[in-house]
Image 1 (cartoon, rainbow, N blue to C red):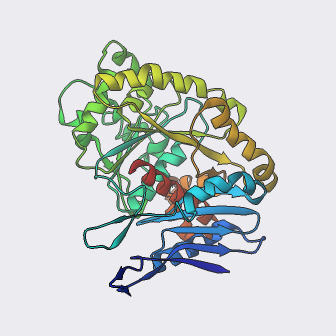
Image 2: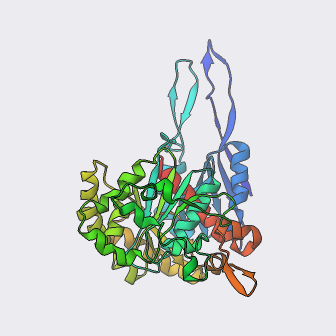
Image 3: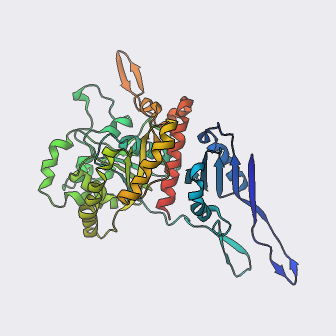
Length: 418
């Protein structure tokens, strides 16, 4: 069942006691599904309804879960979700999103026409840099970084992915490590470390280091690879006080070439992590929300407040904005999602006073399968990784993960452009 909630736009106007015009538009679309239906499977259909009717908001429910989406140019962003058991506690928040008084605001123009003015209108075009960071490993940083880059690229954004983790997982994930033997290593002398060097050669700046994400994604994006030698070279940077600021300064030189820069950071508090967050406008903290991951939250906050924001002040840049803790590697077990997951979510805001992102990335085999794809060349298995959106076009079992990343990308866009 689908319900269309219409408004007048422009509102009926009177002149000399006559109505001079009125146009109906569906502003809110409500779609109700059977309780056994998985809502994830119906998001694309809801998006088609919203696009066809030029509606901005959609509510979808199966009687057990309720979600509210907003339509953007490039897809839907999840604004709110809750279980129907918690509906009474969520009424005020729902009203703020789609209540009669809050769904839209209007202002009178000189021509006596009513124009709808929505919050979250897209701002000026400017490069935005996002650090994906948590100093606990195994929380899905690389998976999030590479697939976000792929989704943003598909949406028409000019994307640069920077791998600053010595494990070089993002570099591998986008298919840049295809060599089988050490003598064929073409990344040892040209990688992200060069951005930390003071010498002024072409390969010490972004354009001289960029490689393309060939075959990883249908729409390519730029990548600056990492290398395991970052570990041994770190000591060379410790005596140079400006090393932690150099990445930010070099990214500033290419701010007209990219819309979004994504930095896959190391799970540490070292100079590479410091440089990553100093260069970033926004911070996303991936976490499985379990106690061991949560124990690292206070030190992340201290790192940001005592080190990163002081560095940014020295660069005359505003403090980094914590976009939120992103639930990642979340079990899809129904009992877990019903009884345990909501409690884990509440801890982030209640105990650590951190914002929590509406999106989540579930733990599914498709996310590892797409990265670990190989092709056989002679007697060798050569890595041939794919982004989750490319993999989903080949394997329908990956569609749920692809939808989650699309939702995440849309949420990030709207939060960055407010």
